[in-house]
Every structure is written in structure tokens, then in C-alpha cells.
Image (cartoon, rainbow, N blue to C red):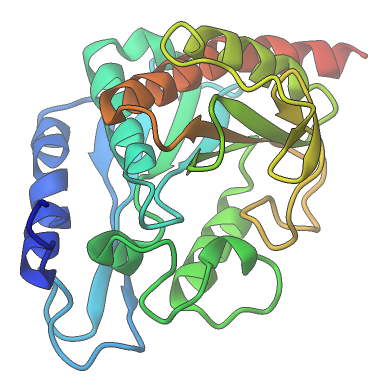
Length: 279
């Protein structure tokens, strides 16, 4: 039997400062990648929180300004990982995607990307689905939640009015890839090629029922109340995608699947927006 994972070992393995440092160093010399972390107060803290002193914790945020994003027609996307703290692949997938963009910025031409790789910092530190206050953050959006992570992220969603929102998740009950679509009527036409691209790494879930929802070729058009989404008053509605990997698959394959899916979403997104505006 492997030794038990002690709180100390968990903190060492999931130390955000150590995890983020390579990307922060890339940002220092980049014309496209910028560090723009947010801070919040953890109401459950009585002292140090992992690597962070007192009651302040960091909600990581990176900005990637693709070539040509200063023009009038740039698209602003929000990419969110780690809303469930035990879904490590979503955190590492978002970070790996930023590293790829740093190496190949043309992938993001015309885009302004706000990437939140760890939406649940205390849950990530503790390797739990929930935040340290015992709440599933991905059931709290637009429900007058007082959770500090939700208040902060809702403010971002309102102020930045994203053209598209992509949430990364990992499902330990699914044998393959799938996703949810909301918002813009043509969102399905962005998720479909993203699933196809990612299925070169992991299988796709073709079950007719996934996560208790009716599914069609791995695409679900319903969802749980309270999940991360655009502000209810935002119009027109943005594209909203939840991309799910099978959490029991090898971690490196999940990371690659998230990276490939995000790249394909960027490739398809502008074409879909243009098509929708011409209808």
C-alpha cells in the first residue's frame, strides 16, 4: 500500500507558487503573456493557507493578448480550470495551453484570453472537489452566493463581458470525452470539432445518457443550475462550453486533450461568430 498523503505532502505537491512560477517567468519577458493574479480572503482561515500567509489567498489569472488583439474586432474569451479542486488535469491543461501559446502566439491571433487556471485555490491545495468552506463552487454562480471565489469571479464575468466562456472539467464517472453547450445558438459547432480533435488522444463518450443528461455524440444541451456561466443579463449571449475529460484516464493524456480542445476552439470560434453575425 502506498503511504498516506499527509497534509504537508499535499501542500508541497499543490503549492501554487511553485506551480505558477515557470509561467510567471515566461510572462516577464513576453509581449503577449501577462500575469494578473487576483486576491481574496478565505473566511475559514485562522492562519497560514498553504504557501499564503494570513487570510489572503491568490486566485491565479493570466492574460494572453494574441497578435492583432488590439484591433476593433478582437474576441475576448474566459478560460476557467480548477473549479473543482480535485480535477488537477484542468489546472495543468490550462497552464500547458498558455505555455503553448507563448511558443506559438499565432494560435491566438485576434484573441484576448483571460485564463483562470485555479478557480478553487483552497480545494486545489487540499485535493478536494469543494472549497475549504465545504461548498461546491460550481453550483453557486448567480445565486447570491457570499463565497469569496464566486463574488470575485462573478465580478470578472460582469466587467469583462466575455464573447466566449470555456470551463474545463474532469469527470471520474465518464469513460470518455464530452461537453456541455449553452449560450450562442452555434456553440455546438465549436464544441464538435474540439471533441473530434481531442479524441485523437482519449476516446469520446457516445453514451445516450451522460451525467444523467440526454447526450448526442458527447454533447449535452442541458446542465446543472449554478454552474459558471455568463451573467444572466448579458446580451447577446456568448458561446459557453464545458469540456470534460475522463478523470480516470492518464493525467498526461487529459492535459493534452484539454490543450488540443482549447486550440481547436480558438480556430473555430471566430468563424462561428462571423457566421452567426451574417444570419
